[in-house]
Length: 481
Image (cartoon, rainbow, N blue to C red; front, side):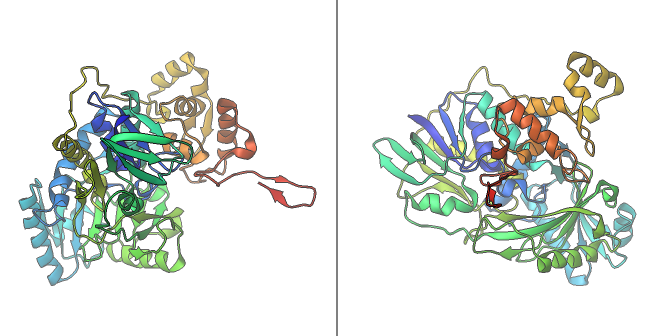
């Protein structure tokens, strides 16, 4: 029997796994997809929020501020791209100027450091591309940008290296109470655990209802984005927000750690939490709102549109608590924004709840808390030459847009959580993320996947289950996938 079963391996589940792997416990992470970070974690704004937005006294406020503090050190230790670029919340009307003051005082009450109210002139000096109609801004130097899927992967990989077991392609289809624990039914086996952490994102209410009385509902909300080419990446240097509304933090324009510019999202409730399609109306709404902040934004520079679905609940705050009628079952649910920011603090709170419920936490003396990976394009010429002399695979460039080498892809395939698809390699290495979006490198990546994994080319996936890349033609002329 495992000590703890974590259901879901997005950023919250991965952070919880990392935190629990510090202790002498048997931990299993159960993920329904074929990789980690393929839900909300891979399709969001990639912002570590400073913490001025949540209402004081809420879990969101406390865990946001604590989480961004922890994230900075975690990203350093685990070699995750991170940049503390700061954020600006713009005001376009006198009423919004008053709201900036409210956010300023709220942030101070939440413990956010170095907040500053800027005049119009100060704001436009910092960001000349902003609309001249800007009346002022709230400046939060502590806000940062991060690679969200690599952040999640790094936490999960480190947990696995420290003994946690990860089971992919394993949707939970039922949970039963046992004396002293639970039995989770998966399609091919059953798993027993003394405690469960429910980090199932948009499915968290369904997992909760398998073992406890309904107490919340997840109401999925979709947000659509533009990702602009690196040629547009320097248009702004900070994360540019508009004043928040009851619908959320609104449409932003922000740099990414990869050097691109991200624009979005809108905010649209959807009945199907797996609906990550993009729509003409949604993207037009994003464009209109974003150009209100940065009129010179050229959306013809877009290299990709995408959307993500957020696990908004019918409750205002995060849902982090033990189920009242199911001892040993703990929900980490309704983790909408600032969930990415708060994740490591949520994980610590989850560990404390487990300890209160009777789990003994004994720290390991041999915990591995560092991670490094090769990013060939960031090396000096001398470092590149030395690496190629050591392993010639680093001299073979597979992705020309991002200068990703065969050696980096092979590193990913040999990693603690090997990728199962072309997009799995993209999330680990960056291949296919450039201007051509994989038009040049995808066949070469497929070849490496086949060679390293011994896969039949007809089984290769673009991303999750069912996304086969190739088909063969039958005698009748139809494609047999």
